Every structure is written in structure tokens, then in C-alpha cells.
Length: 288
Ligand SMILES: [Fe+2]
Image (cartoon, rainbow, N blue to C red; front, side):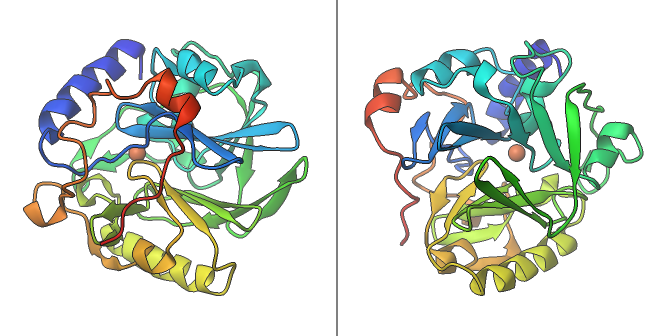
């Protein structure tokens, strides 16, 4: 999606979701010594750093201020050689699209082999219960295609790929160093815990719920100190909170699914400043 289309989407989404209190993006800054993020309106891009290597998780919108905000984190776009993509929606791959600034044109992109079928045109992304077909995304980066359960390393960073289809057919979540789970758009955190992500944007909501059940079961056998980090609603280290309502869908135009702590309009980002990015740690979502 071209820059002007991204800007247009920002305006229309801002109008549509104003007052709905469903997006709770983290501001630009650090979650801890390993994980930093940039805020782009309602979306977050994450950076995971260990022993001098920084990998990026998702690529946000086609957004004019990405390089500036990465500067607040002292991360140089040229230093990003590896980018993990949870799914190919325009708020997760924008900085890779051919009509973006191409800050990362020599980086390798890692994406699920099923998700890649949207990029080849074998599948078309549909939302609003299959009624609306989104335009195809184009990118030219070198790609590595991933399978469910695959484990690989970048330097000494361990990456485990878990397929969690539903929002998109090939949505992948990434468990990094057994400790950090990047969930993209699979879980939506409300005031009282996690729900299956926004219903109107899913390819198949029943599949989303089944996938979350499988993911929870898998995680329960793992490290209990997981940090669970979402694409639009912050992070938690409380597994019970994260999966509290996983059989229920977030329905964005229903009052029940609003969170009083969410901003009135997540597209207004006046409070995202270099000062806070450099000095304030990004806390986990508040649990009731
Ligand atoms: Fe998203």
C-alpha cells in the first residue's frame, strides 16, 4: 500500500474506531533489555536484540516516521538484516512494500509458507466475513519460508515458529529464546484478559479460536515466565490473563469489548515522544 494510501487508511480507520477503545499500542520505547518497539499509530513493530544482533518483528505501516523513531531507540535500519513477519497485512509489512522507502531492502524476510501464498497471488486476503478483498501486497526482499514447528537460529537467537491460522490462513507466531512470544494479530487484550483477535478482520474465526486453544496448550507445557507481546494491545507475562477469553471473539463495535484504559483515538500519537522512548520502560497491560 502506497504511502498516500496508508495515510488515507489512517484517516478512515481513525474515524471508524474513534471512541471504540480497542487499540492499545505501546509507545515507542523498551519493554526490557532485549525488546524495543516503535509505535506507528495503532500498530507496533518490535526489535529483539541479543549479543549485538537486532532482528525486527513485523514491519508496520508504510509510515513516514519509522526511521526517525528507530533513531529514538538508536537502531539503524541498515543494521537490520533479518525481519520476521507474523502475517502479510498492510500494518505488518508496510516498510517492506515496493512503494515504501525501502529502508530494509537488503534484509531477509522470514514468513510462513502458507502466508506467502498471499504474496504469490495464490490466495487473496479477505476481511469482513469474506465480503471484502484487500489489495495484494508486493515486496522484493529475499524470503525464507517457514513451516509450523520449525526452529532456527539467527546468531545465537533461537526462533521457534508456531502456526496460528485464523486471522490469516498462514499467521505465524514466534517464540524467541523460549521466553518472548510475538503474537501479531492472534490475541486481543481487553481489560479483563485476552480474546480471539478482532472478528471482522479474520479469515475464519472458528479456526482462530481452535488455533488459540492449541497455542495455549502448547505454551502451558513451556516456560511459565513467557512474555506475550501483541501487535496492537501491549504485552503481559500472565498466561492466564493472555488466554482468559480465548473462545470469545473481540467484536469492535460492541461496548463489552472496549477497554477504558485504551486511548480514545489510537491514531493520535502526540504522547509518543523521544523523551519517553529514551527514559520510560513500557509496562505490561494492567490486569483487573
Ligand atoms: Fe494488525
